[in-house]
Amino acid sequence: MPPVRTALLVLLVATSLGAAQVARADTYATTFESGFTTGDIGGQQGWQKSGAYDVAIADDGAFVLPLQAPAAFGTRSLRVSNAVTSGSFGDQTFSPSLAEPAGETTSVGGGQASESAPRHNRFELSFTFASAQPGAEQSGLATTLSPDRGDGARMSFLRLRDTPTGLAVDFIDTPDPSVELSGGQYHVNFVQQTVRNLDRTVAHNVRLVLWFVEGADNDVAQLYVDDMTTPKLVGTTWENYDRNDDEASGGGNLVPLTDDLLIRASSTAQPTLTGRGFLLDDLSISSSTATAPPDPELGPTGATGATGANGTNGTNGMSGTTGAAGPAGPAGPAGTPGASAGTEAAGAASGSPVRIAGVRIVRGTLRVRLSCPKAAGLCDGRVRVRTKRGTLLGTPLFDADGGQTVTAKLRLSRAALALAGTNGAALRLVAISRNQRGIAARTVRRPV
Ligand SMILES: [Ca+2]
Ligand SMILES: [Ca+2]
Ligand SMILES: [Ca+2]
Picture 1 (cartoon, protein in one colour):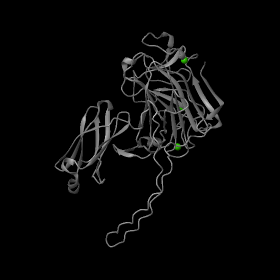
Picture 2 (cartoon, protein in one colour):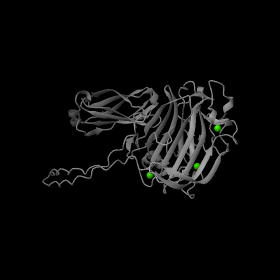
Picture 3 (cartoon, protein in one colour):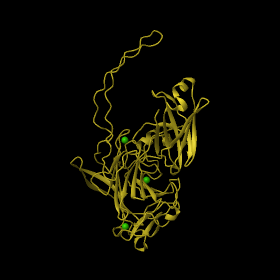
Picture 4 (spheres, protein in one colour):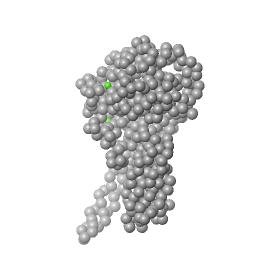
């Protein structure tokens, strides 16, 4: 089947609502068969790739064991490995763009997606993937896929990995709009969830649906793996990053439109995987307009909060004001994803926590020794130092390479020293650290 890009009417059956809606969709779909030739994907059928990454149209019939393609992939598929990687975006692999992007009314194209074309609130990526070496693990194999607009302004993130226990799909989002200071900049927290232990000997179907909902902190992302009726993972897009993170300030903290797919090879290169990797087939991206599912972060409304206590009297003879009535209880917490088999809870796999290797006080300075795991690549973060009662004493920064141990230092006042206990034993320490991939993790040492 040749690649098709067409605007068509589709009937979307919103099973969760039990209602049917008609949505106009713009779709690009391909099985990488006719029109493609074996070799570099760059320049073929509207695909872009100018870097020397190992992303190519494979001749599925030419594989020699232990390499093998699923019969369902036909004569050609897209082979992707991380034999060559870089930190760049513009020279990586991009699919053709949709004519009609997806985003909010305020989302921006940045010259990469049409701002004048009809705009949709839903973006769907779907594909089938398999290991090119189904009989044994390809150690270190990983590739990332992101709905994008053509320049690395990603709105979501999937990573396919091979692991000793099977294939895995990582999903990373930014569930919380709040920022924390690190390295002189304010950053949101990236959280990883993983669908793991997928059978390496068969192909798997993946569908990622992004719902761009007008307003802040309310987008919805649904990740389906193999079961196309119930999402394995539910989260949000990267809008909280775009709107709030200092890294996105260069774009004016505006949310990008989405109209294509970025396949990116980053992190540590695995040269031995040249000519191997994952095979992708039956790939499509589409934009459409439909009714979004409810924001999974909004649980039921909590009970009304208790009335606040009276204010304390002010100093210098001024009476303190009476405390205001307590605010209404906040919305309940987000429901955790269901405990479906092979699914890992949010945050459990997030980042690479540092180890607090030792705490001392030397001549009035708190010294916190932090070990950065080698696998993290680097640990960039800070330690929140609080008393037992929660008073923040300071937030020393640290920056370590993977495998390195560094010391974060905080000069303590006389009053703080009195509360710190012997060698800081009475202090609560929370180390928040980003690894090479920018994923944050938290390590807590409670007071004794
Ligand atoms: Ca094919
Ligand atoms: Ca584009
Ligand atoms: Ca939104």
